[in-house]
Length: 148
Image 1 (cartoon, rainbow, N blue to C red):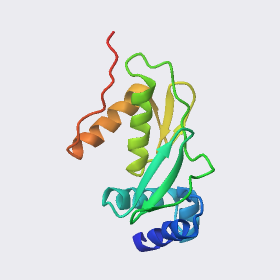
Image 2 (image 1 turned 90 degrees about the horizontal axis):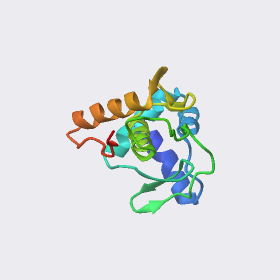
Image 3 (image 1 turned 90 degrees about the vertical axis):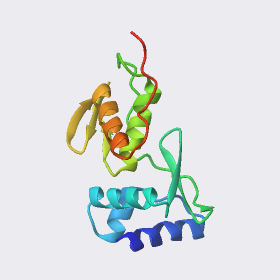
């Protein structure tokens, strides 16, 4: 599966096409979104594939120093929340991006709520989940806790 995924992203890079979404990759290799997202996250963690993100949840893939064009479609973008009592929007966005990079499907479920693999989490729970994941990887936790 990993080689097939790399071929899809390499084709986009070589053609100068937009970065394919995880859903497009899943369709092309004939698997479900979750499995494809996890495989893409593993390839990114292994350094065989990297992504850059910019506002609006656009991304582009880079393989061997060559990049695809920026994606033109939103994929699992949550709406930034301004209601979290403990965390700023930037930290919530970092948590969302980290979990997506690890293969989780993260969707908006309303103000201050997120659907993470069929589980509804608050902003605070989302950041905690990301920090547990970062800790397991030996990385420092997300910073930006607001003082009350």
